[in-house]
Image (tube, rainbow, N blue to C red; front, side):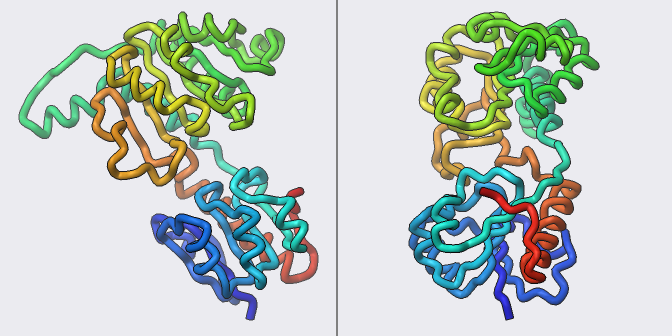
Length: 312
């Protein structure tokens, strides 16, 4: 029988999110880690189901898995899979097209947590203390969006409800596109200089890697906040850490990191002006049901000899 591995099922719920009946499935909850361990763990399997980009399926992994025939990944873009290497080994790569969009909700939750000092106030209450600071209101504040694609545009809609001024910039954004979204187009420097809150919504690429560095953070207001629910390497992690440690900016809300899971001893974990979440942008029950449901559809279609959602 075809053996299937579901990777990085952190919460142990994949089996309940879709109908896997009739399939021989093994669910792995723990992050596997380095290439050698991935190869060792996945030797017996014909089909591997990665959850987004949590596990690197590089050329060495692909070449080390002679039984592998299908990679059924969640999403239609996965930078952790070496698709050319898979194609060279006659391994098909399929993805899932449907998705709920809870990431903008998390971006706004991080902004609210930062602006209203919710984590710090909650900690103070548990210590028997009372009010410890003064928050920043969303109404009338300026939100700067780095990226105005599908997710950035949805964040803009939330911001309008809060009565915020919304500005945006990206390397491909035009004034016309910004106007269509009811957003003001500005230069990159103007965005960092004027924003009270900055939210990152860019695809990670060679152009966007390290796009936010010490220079950009230095342009921010001393009480401004930056939120990243996109990809960790878009912000220079060392520069951000220094800005937070030196109280150069108001704070940061970070859901994504260059290395995930984030090492337990990472210094950013100790900072009281950083609100951290463990890459929860898409982690909701609704999204998981969509992702795992379509993963099963991809597997059954491949088993029937009629593959769907083929990635290239």
